[in-house]
Amino acid sequence: MPNTHKCKLVVLIAEKALEDKLAQDVMRLGAHGYTVADVRGRGSHGDRNGTWDADRSIRMEILCDVKTAVTITTHVEKAYFLHYAMVAFVADVGVLRPQKFSG
Amino acid sequence: MDAIALFFVLGFVARLARSDLKLPAQLYEALSIYLLLAIGLKGGMELAKQAPMEVLPQALAVIALGVVIPLIAFPILYKLGRLDRFNAAAIAGHYGSVSVVTFAVAVDYLAARNLPYEAYLPLFLVLLEMPGIAIGVLLARLGGQWREIRWGTLLHEIFLGKSMVLLAGGLLIGWAAGPKGLEPLEPFFFDLFKGALCLFLLEMGLVAAAQAGALRSSGVFLAVFAIGMPIVSAVLGAVLGTAIGLSAGGTLLLATLAASASYIAAPAAMRIAIPEANPGLSITAALVITFPFNLLIGIPLYHRIVGLIHGS
Image 1: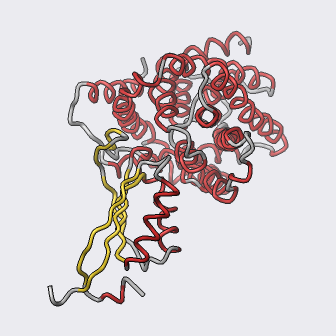
Image 2 (image 1 turned 30 degrees about the vertical axis):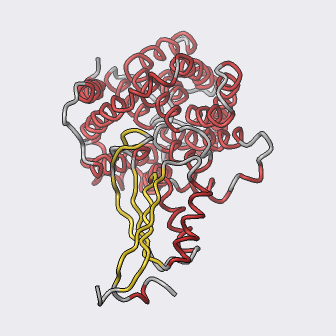
Image 3 (image 1 turned 45 degrees about the vertical axis):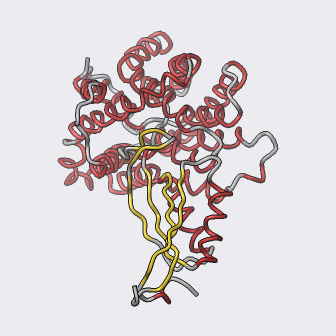
């Protein structure tokens, strides 16, 4: 699309217990912002139906440049994959106002 | 059986029968805020009537109890149960900390039987919530990983976790305002309390049944521990309550507090402080076994134990 600019969308789906830590981490690692939503679902850690604290999951989305996306995903892989329920993936997206998300 | 315990049973059975009954997460959140504040306020109001020097030695003894219980639980889990250090420490921490709802049910048990108790006991609830979690984390790091403990985060989690803020905050407000100041709040915080507790127990029944599947993988040892440990702790609580001069009712509440295991504050703190521990194990033990056990069998049993020890 001619009016959009290439950007990376980093998506982290994780235990709610990690929300504060992840928020601090991504900002420290160069993100300009993030969006968090409460979500529920099922995976290798069983049914996480979000009815109470220990069972809640969040989905954090970060729009950023390639370098920041690499930094963030490398960090979460090292810091959280071993002991926490977490899924991370990166997608190519097109954004408006690219200066909001990189640089 | 008391009516409020039946709400737990209703939730448990409904979930097992795969009913589509679900309480909105926001309602659960709102109810827990309400219950914690109400319990804090009530305790604070009564605390205002006490001489601080009378309560202080009792308070110190209760904190010591909170330290001793996880220190007893840990070797049982680690040596007898052969759990790894992290899981043993995390579970020990859960059992050192307390369950607010179990306390509320025990208060209702006393009220239904017209048994008097020291109404400032919510203070002990606040005091017992903290040490268990801290000791659990220390035990997990005994193997030489002291430097890995992030004290700032841990202390923040223990002292500023939402349940601590609400309980201790309610206690302080109740203490500062006194019975006169709280009079206008009574219809909301005290008269409606039991109804809110019933709704909360319905939700706990649903949650406990949803986690019940994990019982199959957690092993027989954990099930035995989750019933045996509360009884041991209750005896300790009953002995301590008698020793520090509490009434029979107050001693029963302290025994119940000692017997209860945390499934709200401790899981949140442990998940961050001991990531290596499997949260499924401690939650299964505390919520699926110990909580219903205390609710349905434990409290009447502790009443008998207190009768024997307290001698009244």
